[in-house]
Image 1 (cartoon, helix red, strand yellow):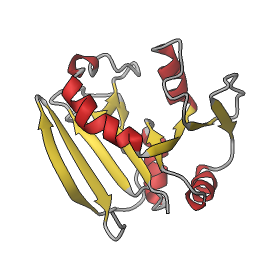
Image 2 (cartoon, rainbow, N blue to C red; image 1 turned 45 degrees about the vertical axis):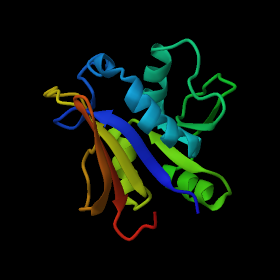
Image 3 (cartoon, rainbow, N blue to C red; image 1 turned 180 degrees about the horizontal axis):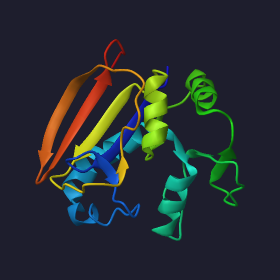
Length: 177
C-alpha cells in the first residue's frame, strides 16, 4: 500500500514559514549535497502531491512554472485553479487520502501546511515524516504542527547532518517501512 509522507524543512522552533509566509530564511541552505542525497531519492518515491491552497499560492509566487509537472497534484480549495498540472478538490482530505492510498502507485507527498499535516496526523493518515531542521529561530510564523488533538508516536529511522541542516526521518510506530 502507498505511504503518505511529509517531507520539508522547519526552523529550530518548528516553523515552516516566517510570519509573512516567506521561505526566504530557508534559501540560504541551498545545498547540492542534501538535494542529491535526500530530496532526489525521496522524490523518486513520489507520484502524487497534496497541498492546501495557501501552499499552492505561495509555491506559485516563487516561480512561473509549476515545479512538479510529472506528478498527480491535488490542491484542497473551494476556489477554482486554472492549471493543467493541478486537480483542484474540495473533497475532505481524509477521503482523498484514503481513496489515493487504495490506488496503485508510489508515495503521496503532503506539501507544507501545518493545518493539513496536523489534521492528517490526528486521523492517523501520515506514515512518515522526513524533516530537515535548520538552526534558525523564527519566533513566529506557520508551525509544522498546529492544534493536535492527541499524542502521536514515531520512531526515528535515520538522521544525517548536511552542514547546518539535520535531516531526520520518522516512521509512525506500528507502520511498516
